Image 1 (cartoon, rainbow, N blue to C red):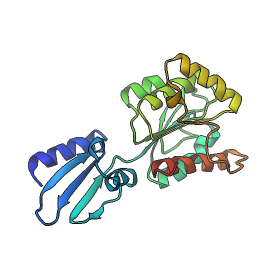
Image 2: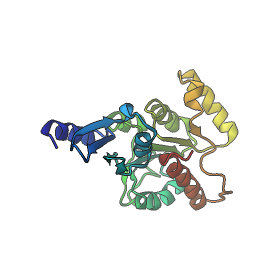
Image 3: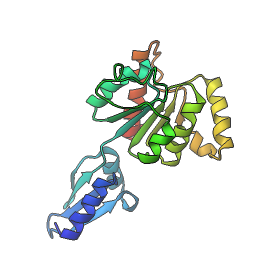
Image 4: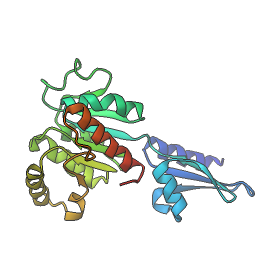
Length: 218
């Protein structure tokens, strides 16, 4: 690989920019493809799946950022989500300014911020390879990260709450300047409709939707 190509590849990986490296196996010519430059359905599919492989005489090596899961709310559902999410390869962060909930005892082994989400997300911005689940029911805590997730085009944005609660949320987000198209991306009520009846089951429903979104199935 040419040094300039390698440097750009390393820059992309360091900055969570997804790229493909296309190598013509006949000529050995290589080029780097960023997501916006994808020109075929197969290239777009590789950006979704992260799978490398051959297309004709070209080998595509996919370099996608590891998926992140940002959970707003250190609640029981969050506790149940962490283990399966980490097992599925997600880099999990929990944010909740309520120190009574966001304690090391309840969330051992996970990145935990007992601070306001806007303060944390200012230094750890969201991106397309991040899923955000807002689980507090409290608009003072949930609304700003939801807005930031929609503006950053996170691959999944979900929020806990009834349809009545979500309708009020929609009004607030519209008042903050978000479009109908952006707001329609919010998964609310959150998660797959599997009849989940307790925090553990709800966590499965939410994580199932996140994985389906990551793989381009919803």
